Length: 74
Image (cartoon, rainbow, N blue to C red):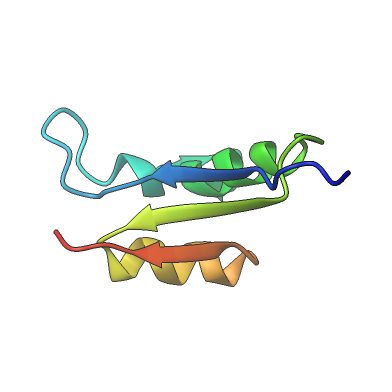
C-alpha cells in the first residue's frame, strides 16, 4: 500500500504592516523565504514544497533558487 503524498505550502506576502518585505530580508546572504523553503526540503515526510504568494518579487526569488510557486490573488 502506498502512503498518501504530503505537501507543504508556505504562505508568503510582501505587504506586512510590522516589517514590510520581511520575506525578502537578507539572512546570511539568502532571503528569508529561501531559508524557509530549503528547511522544509529537509523534511523526509514531505513530497513537495510550494511557496504561495501574490508577489512577483517573491516568485522571482523563489524560482531563482529552485523553489516552486503557487500564485494567489492579493
